[in-house]
Length: 305
Image (tube, rainbow, N blue to C red; front, top):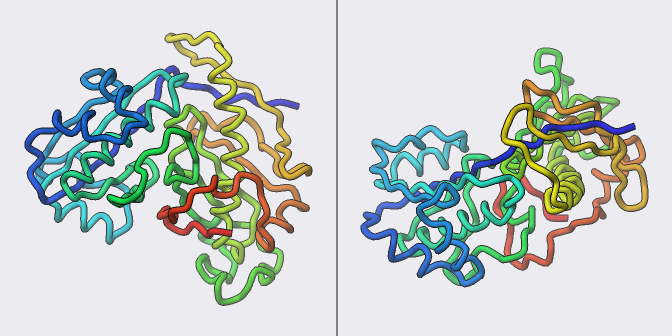
């Protein structure tokens, strides 16, 4: 059995650099003061839809109401200036187009001592002057994935509330399976966001790590399909990709994709098999790991196994 999901002809990314310093000459930073991995690509893309730069006084910025944590949102609104880096590119040019845009945002943040926020993931992008900046090779764990955790039925949620897992332990679910962990950020690559369902509330702390492992596995096939030379159409409906319902990881049937992507919500629903659910949240040994990244990930809630 196979299911299909629509693949858009093009996707967009936005990165917002918040800073108190006045951004006077962005053309002296992008591409010249960017890391070498993406400098040439940024030079070629600058001024096209693939790479646009805009500076705003924060009081006039269209990005004052991003979906961020309360603390991050306070920082965004208190900053004097927002520099907005936007990239819109054909989906087959992902993830490179998004990486180039984020590399430009990193360069601007370094010069103006700012912080980069990604509205799609709802989090800050990890950055420091001594770090290698935007890598040439793509790694989903490099702050490309965010998530939301919720209960499938908030009105009749089980007594074990979300966030209590650290106090009660991973075996206290008592048969609960109401946890829903939804990804944020995959749609910039032309993949529907993933809703991981069927876990117990007691596993809320590790569900994000499981979600990332599933997303990494699905993205591998998605990127291979994008690079296969498929014919793209500009008219509607968009082209669709067919995938197997069962996802195998670590040599077992790991998850089941439950039907086609919901056209209204844009979600691809994923449910772990009983064997995988029993293993995943108690002992994490999933493929993908952390890609050898020696620097900590700053995506909220991520547990490093």
